Image 1 (spheres, rainbow, N blue to C red):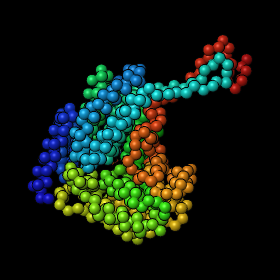
Image 2: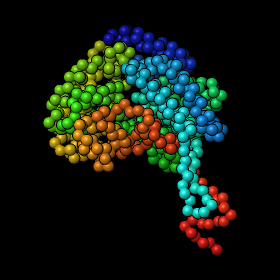
Image 3: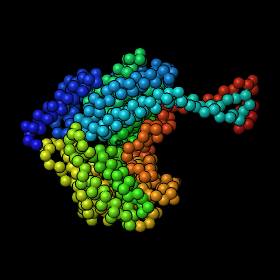
Image 4: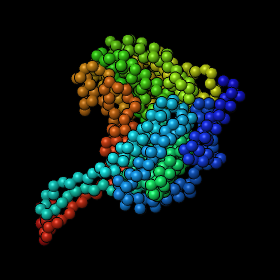
Length: 509
Ligand code: NAD
């Protein structure tokens, strides 16, 4: 594409972003030092002001002040804000999804799916608002009641990554708000416009139901802006989604001030394919999990561990499907793989493939840039590399569509290979053998936070707890009882007798 055509397309996309923002109720931002780009052309959509240390402190202060009253609003009443947010998201689904496509490069169906995930978590949170259950335990003392109560925690700092620019915010915010917390959100500096849209919708939802809009604050900028949330004593919980590198910096700092951390970090997700697997189904699942979202999901399938007897037929199917994947502008119908987010992602992908080949890997397909796009955009064909061993590069997360293929003969070896990486987010087994399936899910099977049978590693539903072990950080968010991370637990003993028996039968005096 010529520079003139690229510039024209970028201008069109910038106009479209401004129109979408207005449709979502947000004024297009004023000029500033933060740049919103579109990976579709690599060009600039808008610039906007970044927050200063002072404005971040003020935002945390407003959230802390709002918490004082918000925590006493009954949880089912707090849910009204989330219910209204769900209505607004439903009404503006297409516009918000298009903004996600413009800013993060996701294809239409995946961007719409991400907004649907926001609506789903809102619905979950609304129901949850009547189910923030504590327990009552039998007391060992007569005339006593022993119970626990869950209370709002405080200000929740949410730091999010570029690749799920809206859903991860909604996972945290919908749950935090019904739990009685207030939120300060630091989105990825790569996706500030979608953040502005979400913030506007939430503030509107609060205003529409007569709640205090200050329960939500947005701060924009890079890691220095996020770092102020990390270090601020007023932030009771820091929920941080991003790379292991970020988590390594953030976790000890929050721990040093005895704050709470919920970490959702990188994955290096594997799938085991056994001889009894339905290869047709496995191939379809593998292609979506490995090449979908251009390999830029934390749950993207990066390692395939296949029994030697079926590796040939499976790879034939997967490689054939890879050849047919349409890579291109995510706004075009029929495109299944959009661009990488930026040049650095492309450089990492190239470097990883070179290292894999130097380790004796064989490039089965992909890895090459797709011609016909702006020189500042990064469209690549998803790659498959067959590896002789799980070398260092395979054990790292490269945030791009590279699928490494390893073979095994013995099931125990497959499980050992699967677990022999530092990350522990998502995993899958494809098998028709119930023993193998159960073994993979058992205590000595997959060591990941997510372990699936006969579906891929990506595309989790919101009903379950989401997160992973080891370098993935151990956090759980979204469904199940993840809400407990957003509340504090008090144990209460009530004496309704006229005696004062001490626990453990202690006699005092
Ligand atoms: P990133 O780590 O570069 O940035 C994530 C966020 O952290 C951004 O908002 C960034 O500004 C902020 N940040 C970075 N350093 C910081 C610091 N020192 N203090 C405070 N904030 C800081 O990640 P990315 O490139 O945006 O996203 C890709 C990564 O995120 C991948 O590793 C992917 O696996 C991971 N991810 C994990 C999950 C999950 O749920 N486990 C979900 C999405 C993405």
